[in-house]
Length: 481
Picture 1 (cartoon, one colour):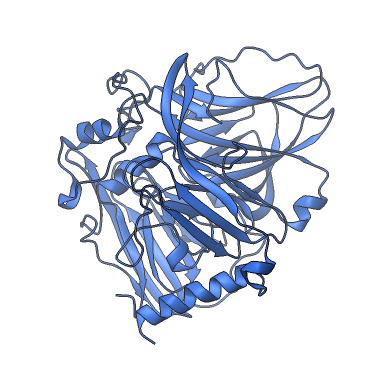
Picture 2 (cartoon, rainbow, N blue to C red; picture 1 turned 30 degrees about the horizontal axis):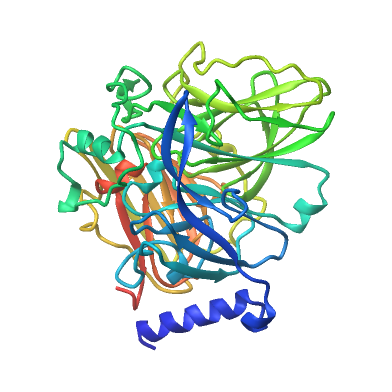
């Protein structure tokens, strides 16, 4: 079967499966989602941004147990874009990335999507140009029957780094106006004001710590569900109730420490995948990763849930408040800078449902490199689209070792395949199953996945500016080269 016939057959089979075999006439109507322009308020100023909205004005999508993923996505922003269903094992044509086989969603166009969803805490975000920096993202929550049975309240938190500047200006400042690989990236137009942010080093960004580069963009604010700590979201919680916090780092380039202060929570899942429970009060969260935390809110108590920028004092967050609990004013800067995010938690994670044990059929090693001057980030010394692409065959167990030789850590994300962390810095590990893992400075991480979803699958740094300036490749199945 040639690639064209394979792609057509895959799309038809996926749609039929998502419709439950009953056809369009017997299925519930799809959920309407629209990429929209909207305005939020940040520190008393109007801020034009993007969003992914339902007809009722809500953000993103929540699916109940057994519900299929059936969406009609409309583009209403007046320019092409594309939305990636991050954490979903969508078939190749519906992953939400543009390439030779998958066009962008044109302005005014509507695109249907239908596939069996992956349960857990996931999210959706732009995968085109700089739209993600302008908040083109939303939660994607797929609940299980166990979730429905649990006597537990839920709260979903989407974190963002925010700038009043046009993201294209930020990228131009970083690169000196030159783009990696000769590419002209499609920046977002008309969705940000012209006032410049703080110069590097004045706010959260542009500084080095312990021989590493951190926070190469200086942001004007950090948001939790579109709000800053001067006006945080306060979530009412039943007296003595349990809460499942679904935390999503939707920031374009910022890693956070989740800080519960004197309160403790149990970590139940990472990237939507269950892990053996771990208790704690601080948890690292790099771009694109998710954490599910379960905690109790005592009667009469308000629990601040803070997200502090690594290497800085800046923070955002929200408050879980029991009935009658006093809610104190929260400062948007901590007393001390947070340390860099590290792999201390990663080394302790153990998957509830690990990959079946089997030897690797294919092994690849990727070296992550690059730097701030010139601002370009590479894989094996090459910038996208010139990077070599690992080629796999359907049915293989694949191991990929990523070694970081640069002075910044990189959150690496593979599309279309959950992977298990099986080695940290050369030490074997039966770690978490997830889709995004941090590769620290001068460190290495090995992940394992099963090649069971044919296509061409991006593998890239989820720091948006690193990806746009070169740190991306593809895992390509034979027949798709």
